[in-house]
Image 1 (tube, rainbow, N blue to C red):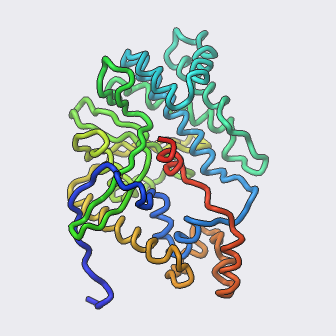
Image 2: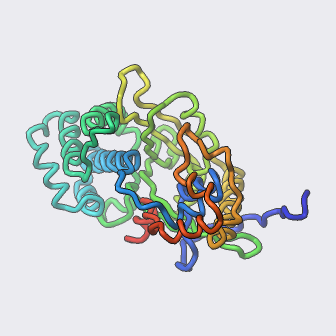
Image 3: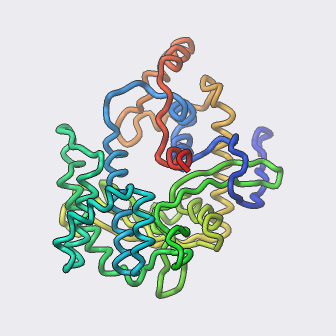
Length: 355
């Protein structure tokens, strides 16, 4: 083993974050560092000023409002907990917006499918989304069609997957819908790393009694590659580990629902996979998190010496946004860095800051 490579100390425990001075690492930020350390450390701090919309991020965030609305509807109309549903809706949408959505759907109350569709469409149309003429995939019409596919998938199985409710007598108790986590990994050598994120849902699989993360993904392709990616993906592992801390009991299972924003009606517009994890998976995830976080800590103030993973310069068949930065001179890179604006916060970073 080369002298420069040392064996990482093992993970000892994961606890709620107490030291807020620790840098918060989200899964998306960690993955960007893995994509390329130079990209990760620069883009995590500074970004080029741009008026262009992040269409994929905006559309994903809008659809996650739909997913949350479906869960809240389930809480009220399937699990018969209207006060819990109202409290959750107020937390996520504001009371006014949720009540307006239900008011717009009142004429469809006699039909479960039509009522849920009317509620979710009202949430869609009251979101901040607006179509861009240059993007014909991420449109309100396509998101409506995707919502219908999602509703048809969920309605059939809601009774078999009840949402976690901490206390059925207390509407303000913890509910398994849109729960933010902020945890700290503690290693044997006393090193600590902060990990943040948002859990889409926590449900119980009635057939087995297993508590299961209920995660949503929007994607342009739902092929075999998409499905198999969750067999080992660190995000699933990390969210299981963090959820165990948040909810106070072991969580080793997940249900991931992939949904196309532009349906093709060819039988692959939605897919569901149920990956599982174990203690060994968590050990490997923790090692990855520490390795990646230490890469950020090492080079966040020294991007000039950060490794460059040039296989990512044209990743996903489009040039990296930092290509002009990296081909510049050292002096030019420093000047560019100073002219960039502060990086926008990820959804997880915003959610943690607001709690």
